[in-house]
Image (cartoon, rainbow, N blue to C red; front, side, top):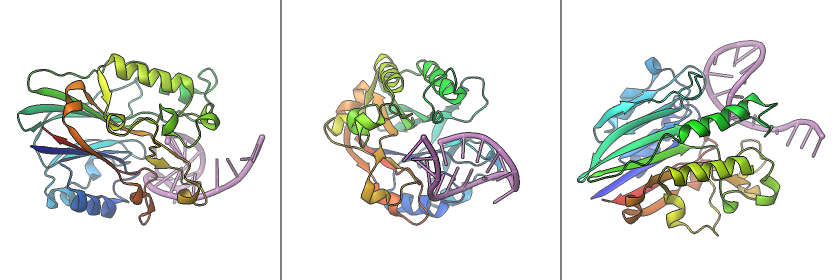
Amino acid sequence: MAFSVATWNINSVRLRLPLVEQFLQTYQPDVLCLQETKCPDDLFPHDAFKALGYEHIAISGQKGYHGVATISRRRLSDVNVIGFCDMGDCRHLSSVVEAGNKKIRIHNFYVPAGGDEPKPDINPKFAHKLGFLEEMRNVVADQGDGFSSILVGDLNIAPLENDVWSHKQMLKIVSHTPIETETLEDLRVKGGWSDLMRHLIPADQKIYTWWSYRAKDWDASDRGRRLDHVWGSQDLENHIKDLQVLREARGWERPSDHVPVIASFDL
DNA sequence: ATGGTAGCATAGCTA
């Protein structure tokens, strides 16, 4: 049976609610994982999603910053949240969805951006990012008889050379420094995760999911990065059928700086 | 080397 999951850093779910509604009506993923909702839980716009048939919602939000939400047409169970680095930030949410004869645990992540200076001794935000990655090693790809795992979200790291517009010019820029890219790849592989986007799209092809707000013309300069990811337990490599990166969404009215990524499976 | 934009605690933080 068909099953799809989307991930999107929305940069304020309330401000961009019309865009999310338009997206859900057009693409109808079974599950949508949002990051940077910037919305306290008591102000989350549940009703708008329920009206579109997304009746199962798990949220972990805070005022002003961060925040993740998982919105689903299928029932969600066993929801839990991991706190990282004793910061109290809302950066993770996991839940279990049933599709076909499988139960799938879906982890929704928002990894710290890390600030501008890639030196942990002088930049506490970068130290926090590295500490977060170390704790992320505990999140492994559980799989078994009728049980699989998916990990999506804004990981704020572009690990491969063709995940950035210029590998050489990005090597000292936070999100593409060797300590970040090597740590992320190491924890991914040791955790049993497959990079499902790269399973379908060869490593010699550029993929971007984010373009800075600060560019004069994001489309023309095209200095993008692949910061948003879809990982899965190894068994899902045989089930993923399609992957869409909605570049057009970066050109929508009052856009997020990230675009949705949709993974479609045949389970 | 600098400054560029966006959102929310509308001031200074996060990204």
